[in-house]
Image (tube, rainbow, N blue to C red; front, side, top):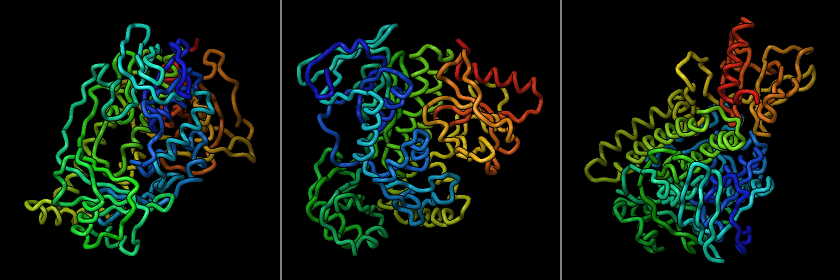
Length: 516
């Protein structure tokens, strides 16, 4: 097996096999390779999708890219917008500019571009990406997983210590591992189309009637339409240009001059969540773990955040220093997020669907007017914007013992003074994917990096610094342990040296693991 799709081998050198070269699989592969894990990606498609199902990266996803020094690559090819829709039936947008982040925007970027940048990053780190190979059988034992792949040269068997299914909503890996995928089936559909020709004078008119309109690369314009007369058409029925024009006229009174379609598709509101994100040595991420109606543009972003959470934990397991329960926290933390996203999108989808129905159209319209009024209130808007952008994601402490309120929350990207004249931002410290232990009680004489712990080589970096800017959430915090995914593993405000030392030891043993 080679990245060009010719030849074959058993993959005996593989520690982790990632099945699926979408955004989640590619980011995960890069994270594993960054941690020194021998990783391969297999993908059944010979080429990446030319069309882009997703169009944006939310603020938290941009923070993740920033943590690995990749944000500028994405900003160079995308376009920032100040917010996003909570539901197409609402006129008031979510305002990301009010959020406490260095990335207070949505980045408009085609999924194909996102995949290309993540593939470039993975290859830079030594990951091989093999296209044209479809997983057709999977068997796991106590020591590893064997996957049979059907490729250009026939069938080949690959063995790895762990396999991660990032192979979409119809995931073969999930099914082969026997992981259930409960939820609700399709009851409503919408149509999406990318057009080379469109009359942009009608864009605002279309948006006022709930049509999503987005200008894409190469002069294309995307329209997403929910036609009350066509929302029960199965997603398997092909979309025609004539249907699209008719639906636009029915919904907003004009066909917006669309012509020369480059992509037409129909999608539904199937909503499902995997029963478990892990079964033995098989794990799931992205759409293989959760699918839902794309309201709020949360699917791709949730998958990226799955990958960032899993990468360092799986690497720790492979390298043998993971505390006993560390890998299980992937399911504990991300399944709860998946549940919140799938539950939330069900509610958001109702806000889209009910105004289109004869029975509920009038009361649903009144409800939408009320919600628009609430979204006009800064605190309400900020609350929902933080939820949709995932900036409010917080993970529970690993045990029932008392913990600082910051535990599990995202670490603010504050500036830190490392000398009398030099400062560094927190996310810059995470570029290599290590834990970072910050002593925030530093002064000009004590600031600086401490020697790496002999017992935890390559796991944790320790810095004494002082905050160069005020952050109200960090007020009184004297020490903080930041996870490789930018969440806070432990924080303390105690002034008692002995108590602080005991807390620190427990936190280090719980997260970066006991010294070798």
